[in-house]
Image 1: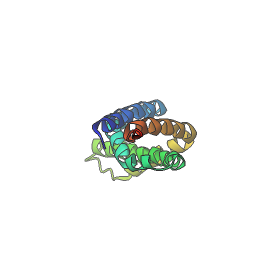
Image 2: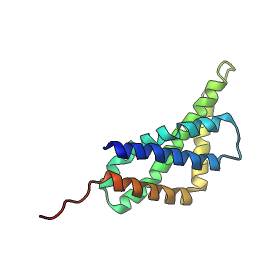
Image 3: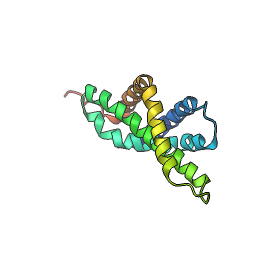
Image 4: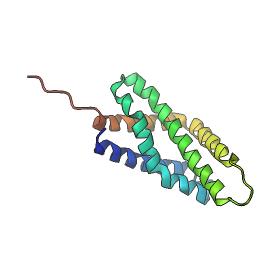
Length: 139
């Protein structure tokens, strides 16, 4: 895995954070800001997890790109929920906001999955151009 791929995964996560912000703009509050702030790291994690898939066939990469959307949404919901628990610590709050926010992220992802899947396919196609080694020149 090269450094350029990791940097682009980090930047890709930042772009996905912008998408998440636009999707969640109707739900203002500091919690979604925590998820958006963590999005570059989430993009890096998803990039590392999806790195082996660039060797697979195109159909398999298209299918796994949807999986990457749900992995990213899960991590986003985890961060948002953890932030809410942290902010309310001492108020007797349990860890249930973490699961609620993860479920909310899955729900939002499922509603918009055709558009998000298309974006993920484009994202992984572009990252795959950097990740895959260039073909060898014939001798």
